[in-house]
Length: 457
Image (cartoon, rainbow, N blue to C red; front, side, top):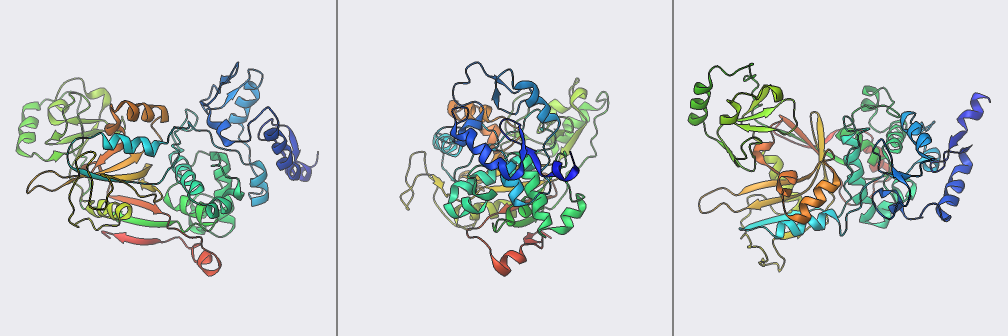
């Protein structure tokens, strides 16, 4: 077989039969029209429906297969398909729906119900609906950026028909990571973010390269989505001067220092003793993600296995919280309002939870990204500043875990709420997607990647 002939052929995304590229779309549709596969994208959700004698993918992608299909399916994981050249006709023919656990009535609706079950005077605002995409054992170490792009895409596809028709060839579903990688290369070839393309070697398909805000923006902009980057820079950096030795020989001095300096880390729980909030120094493990200790537990024996630790000091990211509050509510952060008791009514006639229907926010810092789906504000009492929490979905958390916590009203705050003192990185980025599709010169202008707004620089 000649090289030219090989490049004009590709495997069917359902049965893996090798076909001419121009024949794949019709061939795939024949599967969708048959009894083998439902025409609804829900077939790829993995955990929905009766799998009969089928078994889940051993590598954790979420698909259920017959035992006969498992060997070829595992081989497909280990030898990811490459769409070459990554142009729209080829990608449209070969892209596949992403797998995810469908939550009914929707993860945002469950979050609204959990928020409404709280006590105290508060207000919250949530994004529009979306699907949660969690990492799998295959991609847990590198695909957080792709999973957050999928979460944002799932909302945009549901937002209106114009966006759905413009994105991903109008397929109506959120593509899998390999397809997303091809779409990013397609954006680069179309002239979007040429500097970023050069930094990543113009190639991401079949790799484990990390992507961030600018890659998410470039991928979405090629469809006309006005994906805008917002930069935030905080005040102080966290201090790394406390690197835990094998045995704390000066525990008494440490605890004395903890008593002398007593900031309150609202919303942050010590993962050893359970005290919440942590008062005094807070120590974050450099080994375990988001594992925090209070000063007392940090000084105990036996903590070496989960160290070293970083002492987290205050970093001022008020501007980010203010921005997110105004984004979801339309109000300035300092605007006066009355909080609501659960089930109470505001002057506008709605309850304490606002369903804004705004797109979620892609949220990036060095080393990881998440998706902001809302913000919450608690009134703290006379003369005290209100406490604010970002409401976040993290791709490193399992969808079933989040769903279970929201339904049971147990542990969901720990998974989703993040207070101001949690923002310990010096810089963060948001990606927002205002309504409307860009075209003509406006689309050309989006090819240049620059921050639309900057705070603290």
